[in-house]
Image 1 (cartoon, helix red, strand yellow):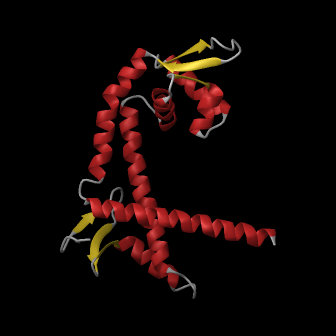
Image 2 (image 1 turned 135 degrees about the vertical axis):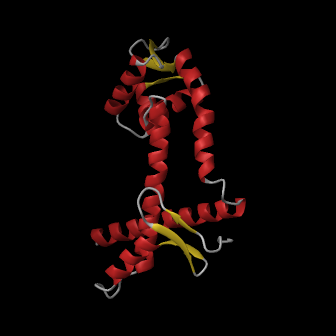
Image 3 (image 1 turned 90 degrees about the vertical axis):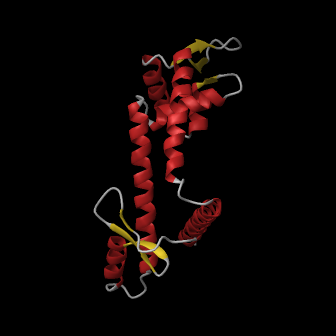
Length: 197
Protein backbone atom coordinates (compact mmCIF):
# COMPACT_ATOMS: atom_id res chain seq x y z
CA UNK A 1 0.00 0.00 0.00
CA UNK A 2 1.43 3.37 -0.99
CA UNK A 3 1.23 5.87 1.87
CA UNK A 4 1.09 9.56 0.95
CA UNK A 5 4.29 11.32 2.05
CA UNK A 6 4.16 13.91 4.81
CA UNK A 7 0.41 13.65 4.96
CA UNK A 8 -1.43 14.75 8.06
CA UNK A 9 -5.21 15.04 8.07
CA UNK A 10 -7.79 15.71 10.70
CA UNK A 11 -9.82 12.65 11.62
CA UNK A 12 -13.54 13.26 11.56
CA UNK A 13 -15.12 13.80 13.97
CA UNK A 14 -12.74 15.27 16.53
CA UNK A 15 -9.38 16.97 16.76
CA UNK A 16 -7.11 13.92 16.40
CA UNK A 17 -4.30 14.01 13.88
CA UNK A 18 -3.68 11.16 11.44
CA UNK A 19 -0.12 11.03 10.15
CA UNK A 20 2.35 8.64 8.60
CA UNK A 21 4.56 6.69 10.99
CA UNK A 22 6.96 4.11 9.57
CA UNK A 23 4.90 3.71 6.39
CA UNK A 24 1.55 3.40 8.20
CA UNK A 25 -1.14 6.02 8.76
CA UNK A 26 -1.69 6.27 12.52
CA UNK A 27 -3.97 8.34 14.74
CA UNK A 28 -1.56 10.08 17.11
CA UNK A 29 -4.23 10.46 19.81
CA UNK A 30 -5.10 6.76 19.76
CA UNK A 31 -1.42 5.78 19.68
CA UNK A 32 -0.73 8.01 22.68
CA UNK A 33 -3.70 6.61 24.64
CA UNK A 34 -2.60 3.05 23.94
CA UNK A 35 1.03 3.73 24.86
CA UNK A 36 -0.07 5.37 28.11
CA UNK A 37 -2.24 2.37 29.04
CA UNK A 38 0.63 -0.01 28.27
CA UNK A 39 2.66 1.60 31.06
CA UNK A 40 0.13 0.31 33.61
CA UNK A 41 -0.15 -3.31 32.47
CA UNK A 42 2.74 -5.64 31.76
CA UNK A 43 1.07 -7.92 29.18
CA UNK A 44 -0.83 -5.12 27.42
CA UNK A 45 -0.95 -5.04 23.59
CA UNK A 46 -0.92 -1.32 22.83
CA UNK A 47 -1.17 -1.87 19.07
CA UNK A 48 -4.31 -4.00 19.54
CA UNK A 49 -5.90 -1.19 21.60
CA UNK A 50 -4.96 1.38 18.96
CA UNK A 51 -6.47 -0.87 16.29
CA UNK A 52 -9.69 -1.29 18.29
CA UNK A 53 -10.01 2.49 18.76
CA UNK A 54 -9.31 3.12 15.06
CA UNK A 55 -11.84 0.52 13.98
CA UNK A 56 -14.48 2.03 16.28
CA UNK A 57 -13.74 5.56 14.99
CA UNK A 58 -14.03 4.42 11.36
CA UNK A 59 -17.32 2.65 12.11
CA UNK A 60 -18.71 5.66 14.01
CA UNK A 61 -17.74 8.01 11.16
CA UNK A 62 -19.36 5.70 8.62
CA UNK A 63 -22.59 5.29 10.62
CA UNK A 64 -22.94 9.03 11.25
CA UNK A 65 -22.68 9.68 7.50
CA UNK A 66 -25.20 6.93 6.72
CA UNK A 67 -27.57 8.28 9.41
CA UNK A 68 -27.31 11.78 7.97
CA UNK A 69 -28.07 10.52 4.45
CA UNK A 70 -31.04 8.44 5.65
CA UNK A 71 -32.46 11.28 7.76
CA UNK A 72 -32.45 13.67 4.79
CA UNK A 73 -34.93 11.25 3.17
CA UNK A 74 -36.99 10.69 6.33
CA UNK A 75 -35.62 7.18 6.88
CA UNK A 76 -33.89 5.23 9.63
CA UNK A 77 -31.69 2.15 9.32
CA UNK A 78 -34.61 -0.07 10.32
CA UNK A 79 -37.11 1.46 7.90
CA UNK A 80 -34.60 1.38 5.05
CA UNK A 81 -33.82 -2.26 5.79
CA UNK A 82 -37.53 -3.17 5.69
CA UNK A 83 -37.99 -1.37 2.36
CA UNK A 84 -34.99 -3.16 0.83
CA UNK A 85 -36.22 -6.55 2.09
CA UNK A 86 -39.61 -5.91 0.48
CA UNK A 87 -38.05 -4.67 -2.76
CA UNK A 88 -35.94 -7.82 -3.04
CA UNK A 89 -38.63 -10.33 -2.05
CA UNK A 90 -39.76 -12.64 -4.89
CA UNK A 91 -43.42 -11.62 -4.65
CA UNK A 92 -42.94 -8.07 -3.38
CA UNK A 93 -44.99 -8.93 -0.30
CA UNK A 94 -44.03 -10.63 2.95
CA UNK A 95 -45.65 -11.42 6.27
CA UNK A 96 -44.53 -9.65 9.42
CA UNK A 97 -42.89 -12.81 10.74
CA UNK A 98 -40.97 -13.34 7.47
CA UNK A 99 -39.72 -9.74 7.55
CA UNK A 100 -38.76 -9.95 11.23
CA UNK A 101 -36.74 -13.09 10.51
CA UNK A 102 -34.98 -11.54 7.50
CA UNK A 103 -34.29 -8.30 9.38
CA UNK A 104 -33.02 -10.19 12.46
CA UNK A 105 -35.42 -8.34 14.73
CA UNK A 106 -38.42 -9.16 16.89
CA UNK A 107 -41.99 -9.16 15.54
CA UNK A 108 -42.74 -6.31 17.96
CA UNK A 109 -39.96 -4.14 16.50
CA UNK A 110 -41.07 -5.05 13.00
CA UNK A 111 -44.63 -3.94 13.78
CA UNK A 112 -43.34 -0.53 14.92
CA UNK A 113 -41.22 -0.15 11.76
CA UNK A 114 -44.10 -1.13 9.48
CA UNK A 115 -46.48 1.20 11.33
CA UNK A 116 -44.10 4.12 10.71
CA UNK A 117 -43.66 3.23 7.04
CA UNK A 118 -47.43 2.80 6.56
CA UNK A 119 -48.11 6.20 8.16
CA UNK A 120 -45.69 7.73 5.63
CA UNK A 121 -47.46 5.93 2.78
CA UNK A 122 -44.38 3.88 1.89
CA UNK A 123 -45.84 0.41 2.57
CA UNK A 124 -49.35 -1.06 2.64
CA UNK A 125 -50.90 -3.99 4.44
CA UNK A 126 -53.12 -6.50 2.67
CA UNK A 127 -54.68 -9.84 3.55
CA UNK A 128 -53.10 -13.01 2.18
CA UNK A 129 -55.21 -14.77 -0.46
CA UNK A 130 -54.20 -18.19 0.86
CA UNK A 131 -54.61 -17.44 4.59
CA UNK A 132 -56.85 -14.56 5.69
CA UNK A 133 -55.23 -14.61 9.15
CA UNK A 134 -51.90 -13.49 7.64
CA UNK A 135 -51.27 -9.86 6.79
CA UNK A 136 -48.82 -9.20 3.98
CA UNK A 137 -46.74 -6.05 3.66
CA UNK A 138 -45.67 -4.57 0.34
CA UNK A 139 -44.13 -1.37 -0.95
CA UNK A 140 -46.47 1.28 -2.30
CA UNK A 141 -45.74 3.18 -5.50
CA UNK A 142 -44.52 6.03 -3.32
CA UNK A 143 -42.18 3.65 -1.47
CA UNK A 144 -40.74 2.25 -4.71
CA UNK A 145 -40.25 5.73 -6.13
CA UNK A 146 -38.51 6.89 -2.96
CA UNK A 147 -36.03 3.99 -3.23
CA UNK A 148 -35.42 4.75 -6.92
CA UNK A 149 -34.56 8.35 -6.05
CA UNK A 150 -32.70 7.63 -2.81
CA UNK A 151 -30.45 4.69 -3.73
CA UNK A 152 -28.22 6.44 -6.31
CA UNK A 153 -27.48 9.26 -3.85
CA UNK A 154 -27.00 6.80 -0.99
CA UNK A 155 -24.64 4.50 -2.87
CA UNK A 156 -22.78 7.51 -4.25
CA UNK A 157 -22.13 8.69 -0.69
CA UNK A 158 -20.92 5.24 0.40
CA UNK A 159 -18.70 4.83 -2.67
CA UNK A 160 -16.92 8.11 -1.96
CA UNK A 161 -15.51 6.63 1.26
CA UNK A 162 -13.56 4.11 -0.78
CA UNK A 163 -12.66 6.21 -3.84
CA UNK A 164 -9.11 6.70 -2.57
CA UNK A 165 -8.46 2.97 -2.19
CA UNK A 166 -7.26 0.71 -4.98
CA UNK A 167 -8.99 -2.60 -5.69
CA UNK A 168 -6.04 -4.36 -4.05
CA UNK A 169 -6.38 -2.21 -0.92
CA UNK A 170 -10.12 -2.87 -0.76
CA UNK A 171 -9.52 -6.62 -1.01
CA UNK A 172 -6.77 -6.41 1.64
CA UNK A 173 -9.08 -4.52 3.96
CA UNK A 174 -11.88 -7.07 3.38
CA UNK A 175 -9.45 -9.89 4.07
CA UNK A 176 -8.18 -8.36 7.30
CA UNK A 177 -11.64 -7.42 8.59
CA UNK A 178 -12.91 -10.95 7.93
CA UNK A 179 -9.82 -12.42 9.60
CA UNK A 180 -10.62 -10.24 12.60
CA UNK A 181 -14.22 -11.48 12.60
CA UNK A 182 -12.97 -15.09 12.58
CA UNK A 183 -10.53 -14.36 15.42
CA UNK A 184 -13.31 -12.74 17.46
CA UNK A 185 -15.54 -15.79 16.89
CA UNK A 186 -12.68 -18.14 17.82
CA UNK A 187 -12.00 -16.17 21.01
CA UNK A 188 -15.70 -16.24 21.91
CA UNK A 189 -15.84 -20.02 21.37
CA UNK A 190 -12.74 -20.51 23.52
CA UNK A 191 -14.20 -18.31 26.25
CA UNK A 192 -17.53 -20.20 26.15
CA UNK A 193 -15.65 -23.53 26.39
CA UNK A 194 -13.61 -22.25 29.34
CA UNK A 195 -16.79 -21.19 31.15
CA UNK A 196 -18.42 -24.58 30.50
CA UNK A 197 -15.42 -26.47 31.94
